[in-house]
Image (tube, rainbow, N blue to C red; front, side):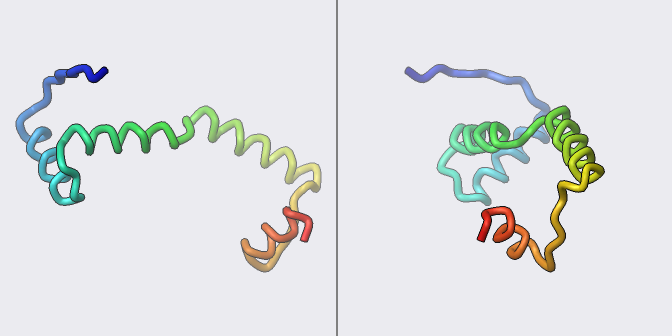
Length: 81
């Protein structure tokens, strides 16, 4: 079941959102907002990024990193090819 969500925004922001939705080909502002929320769900948090970086630094210091001439080659090495 759908629910209505009302938000209060400055007029300039409202116009920017409507313009962006139209320019990007969305049929409605609602569909554009849903798209943005879905995209936000795919973004990791700053805290998670910092944890991942610290773990990568630790692995690098322990000599667990690999050297490859390109990202493609690194992925091949990682996959065990």
